[in-house]
Length: 101
Image 1: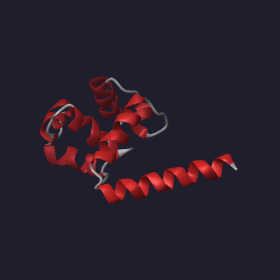
Image 2: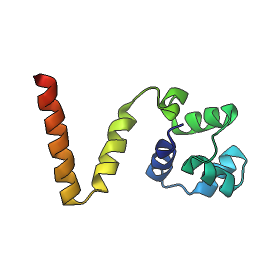
Image 3: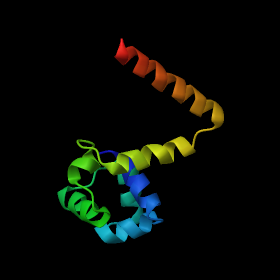
């Protein structure tokens, strides 16, 4: 499971881990372990989370992309300082130039 997506979706909605734990009928610590990648959600948990966030299970597992991927990238880029952003931009441009050769 893409645990970074669980964190991103939860923060995007302004929720706390305990909110998702209640939805899944688990303790906050159990949910925290899922979000950190130590445990995985079971099938019924995946269904509940997918319905709650209105995303596919494939999206949660990292097998498909959606508009949320763009939002996720934008949010991650905002976390970078200016030097990290410049470094990322250079790497992206280098990759594009290499693909065009």
